[in-house]
Length: 157
Figure 1: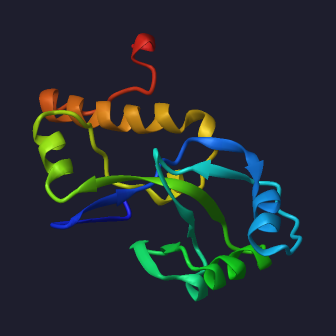
Figure 2: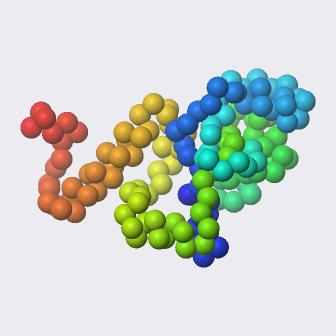
């Protein structure tokens, strides 16, 4: 979730890489060639501008978590593609809700939530869904039975 207030909510899907690379898309956006083979991610079902989550403070338009920044302006995105020391992910599209809509969906039980984790934002996407759902499941289990230790694989218990 990038922003959530009384006006609405705006977020990005983290685990949907597309076929296009940053290099391919950047050439279309700026006619400048760069060498970056990481994929562009589908940020959500709503069409929107190219945006990024990143760790480069100099290109920050907003801080979404301590040390994790958001950018959407071309000048800030250009700073990201020209550097190689800080991780970043580009997204096209987003997930959005009108004011009060997400709260209604949450209260109806339409979503299971977990606190954002810096490591997950730039992690390999193959196991991201499993990692997040495991975290949510462990949280529910811990509240229900208050165990001293839950093994990673309960079948080995």
